[in-house]
Image 1 (cartoon, one colour):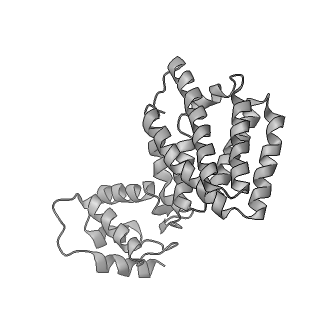
Image 2 (cartoon, one colour):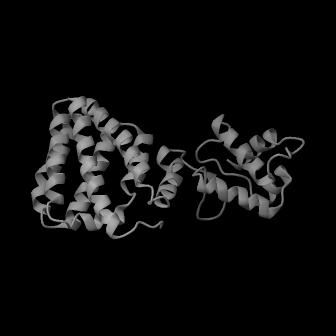
Image 3 (cartoon, one colour):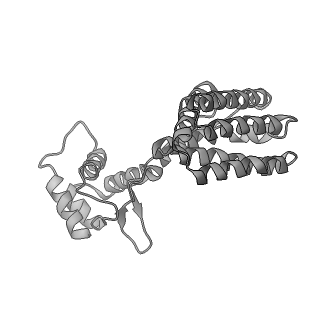
Length: 250
């Protein structure tokens, strides 16, 4: 809807630019405000670049800088055939930059595992409350599959990622789900090696089983405690291998 989007942008364009912000930042803030107020909606197509330059009274380099920033934030996207569109504005899209930030912060294990405890304990508590019959069957099937990967670290890592993702989905909070995904991938290169250590897969299987048993019993407190224990085991093995191979940013 280029005409409607153009009208919204023109209405929001101030008569005089604010000097405290760069022109590019002003454009970013203006578009974000239009999205927040619902004047720009998912799927809306922004006007062509030449029109945006006129609307915002901005140079082409400054405009492109602003559009890049909005793209990184997950607010707009370029589509095949040309043009910039407002994204679906779903949490998974808007929180994608968090994954990038976390991937650059792998040396900060203390903060990472503190965040995992806060987020994933709450997720399993919500899962114990929200899980439906199909969810419980899916979790039980995953536990039943664990013995098949006792001697297969790669297979276990695939199953482990599916298990934690399933818990996040059952938790029912899209933002917690996205944050948990980013935190799960933090230090993953170290944990890949840790899963080859004797006893790690067996211990994780026990931890997963206790978590699922608590969820099936609708026991939020026990589910949270089981997840705390599981994360303590993950942190311990990650730290053992981190001392052998220092973590460096990606």
